[in-house]
Image 1 (cartoon, rainbow, N blue to C red):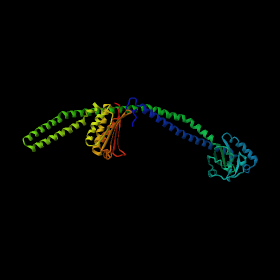
Image 2: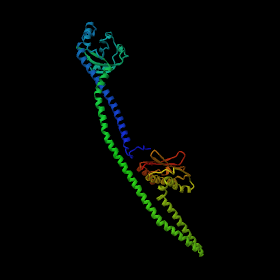
Image 3: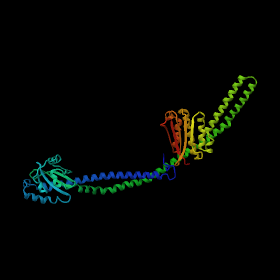
Image 4: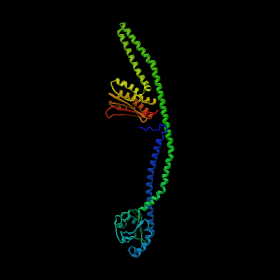
Length: 436
């Protein structure tokens, strides 16, 4: 069911506008979170690239040119000389420096206990050593060569393939705290995040007047459509009243007079002994009276006199009378004191006409229940039957009457639904606003 606080009511743009603002705010938050995550990753990548570049400069510019045969053989004097070169590197976020030869031996480290130990070089490190490239990864602190760094939670290991002045291949490794890398990335995205989120919020704010204008246009369009519907209903009601009046004052009265004349003629013929002719004339009089009754029933359908004078419940009762005459069990649940705007009464009456007509033509039902309920600014007409599936027989788009009911509900801002019941039969539900 639609909410009563919609575009049809004065000020009805408030709720849709609030929904638009809320959905826009949610979209801004989601986009902001995605963008922040993307920038965070980009910032981290940039920080890693910076670490690679610093390692390249330190390895090729400071450490590798200072490597000699004495250092490669583990001579203490050359180790102390390299300590002086490495000391400025191992400060702040850098916790370890290692220098490997191609055989997997650590020829130098600021942790002297590692010097001279041998370990297997990983595949990525081997590629960097062979191709003289630089790469980075999160260090596996469970490896034996990293046993002295295990007190650190997470380290970024940057390794560079280089060579000594005499051409000896070397692998230069720098271990940096990953928290410093993350901090560098965070500083980068924090520079851009406020501007980006501010731009998104500004875009959202700029859309609010446009949304408000569109909602007002939509509301005006709905109001104009409802006015057209009301005028069409008024015109149809006026035309129905005129046709009913013309039929009643013209053809119905004339046929009633003809029936009396034929009855009198039949009686005269019978007294004159012309019994066979009298019977034919009497049959014509009965047929004429039957036609008069059918025309009067049609007049009630065209312009129900009880609709606006006695209310919708009384008019529904008149509609159910022919079904009761057919032997159907009928049950009407409607408050006789309920009064609705004339437009709503007309729409519901026409819908009930079509719904009961379908029951008669298609349902083969033994019982029909009609209920009219008013709740929360809307009124619902429900017709339930115990037939053999009127919904299956008439629910197709080609059924003119149901298309008319569906269009009537749509134009009145309501809803129409025709469904099968679990217990058998069909449920016809027609709901429209009860406000004028």
